[in-house]
Each structure stands twice: as structure tokens, then as C-alpha cells.
Image 1 (tube, rainbow, N blue to C red):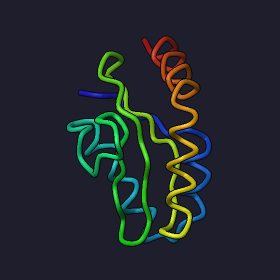
Image 2: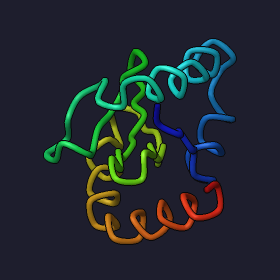
Image 3: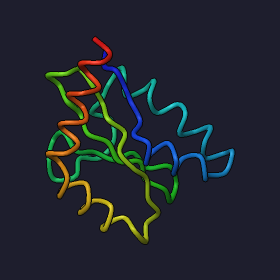
Image 4: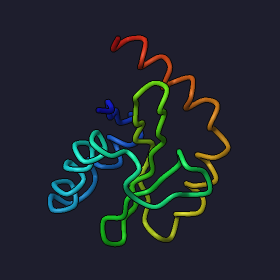
Length: 105
């Protein structure tokens, strides 16, 4: 079982969604805790997205930490810029995941 944690960015973006979308998004952590490799792979096995109609949820899977980090969301129009941002900051997200894993352990 994986621990699923949302970044402040992710949580802030989700809070702006409509109630219907938020209710769907709130089920994602439970599903990812059981199987973190749901969703589409984005160039790397550990970098993935789940679609909720026209919205996307981006996350990173850290098998060694048993952690899934929910990073951000996007609409189709800003999808590529979010993907590029996350790829550019893989190292920073890894450090954040390690800090979270230490705090929770």
C-alpha cells in the first residue's frame, strides 16, 4: 500500500474545481494507494497522469519510498507546459518526497 500526498499546488488547483470534479478527484488517492500505476505514463514509468474528462492530474510514483506525490493539474490547453515544468523539476520533487517520507515514518 502506497501513501498518497498532494502538494500545495495540487491541493490549491483542486480547490478551484467544481464540486463534481472535486468529488471525482477525491477518489484518486484511494485508487492510487492500491495501484500507483493507474493512468497514462508520461515518458517515464514513474511519471503519470489520470484524466478526469478534460482535466488531468499529474503525479510521481516513488516505489522505494512507497509514496505517490500528486503534483499538479491542468486542462488540455496548458497540459504541455505543466508536463515540461514537472520534468524540469524531477530532482526537487524527489527531495520533497524524501522529506515527506521522513516526517511520516
